[in-house]
Image (cartoon, rainbow, N blue to C red):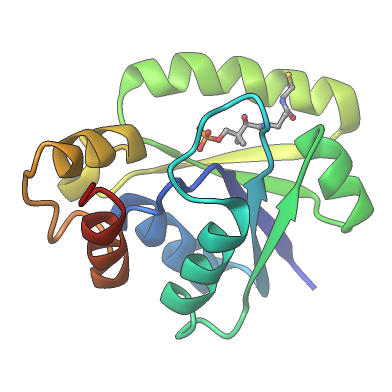
Length: 158
Ligand code: PNS
């Protein structure tokens, strides 16, 4: 069984994330989408809300599972028998950061990291930008799944 993890905060998932998950699902037998539980970071959606959304928007991919984790990603990988991490790279600055993270994770555990170029349609996209646009009434349709668009509108209504 060739298994890989797509980790992140997913607060909320964007179409850029979904594109990476879907492409990984075509390449691997099983894709585990792992949501970081980070009590230090203020989030818009709770971890369980994010998991519900991820499960709904990845329903069409039977080999995608959604899980949560805390602590080190490589420990989650070891516990779940996952030999590799997939990371989307949008711009060169992502690579600078992710390269060091990948090398560190490999040094800690032997878990590999594979970089997947983001679809250029989404290379400007991030969860924080989506939240900012939505907060000020901008239109995020086409940037996030419809369900996320709806939830963002409800949550940020005031
Ligand atoms: O969507 P994000 O917030 O950019 O995702 C970042 C994530 C969750 C992939 C990263 O912060 C992570 O792996 N955190 C777990 C802690 C860890 O393993 N850190 C690496 C060694 S310092």
